[in-house]
Length: 223
Picture (cartoon, helix red, strand yellow):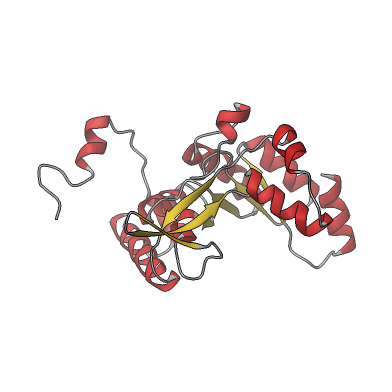
């Protein structure tokens, strides 16, 4: 919190985003400290293991719903960060009160992502790693200090992310076309012409495992 206050004092005309938090109290604390937007999401990312390692976190949709109420009261935008695997997830996060959605794994396998391109069993992938992974930590330390002790880091560093492979998916443009198209269609199903109107109209319903199964292709052999 002191860092937020220091930055806002030094750069009063700059907008500051802070996070990540997953509770209404967390949002309130950041707003009191002076932030202009809050990132919400702890442990929901595809390469995040925070919940396993620390036992801390909140299911993403619940976190967005709880945090968005506080954000709305203070006119502070909420950014849903994590757990977005497709356009349907993005639509639900926006409907739950998020002003915007961050995506990582959906773009991790694109041409524009910085990861190395690999081929495994005839399929192409790109290296994708969490910023709290050991590999990312070593990379930062190497840039900052020049030399690092691999043995010390392996023994001392508690990783909250992993390094993985994201399927190659072409260009960001192709992904965003599908993403924005799905969100627009989601708005139409809620009878909305804007995200704000969708947030007013949307109704969330708890579904069973059978309901989830019928949401996906079933009783056919996919080609």
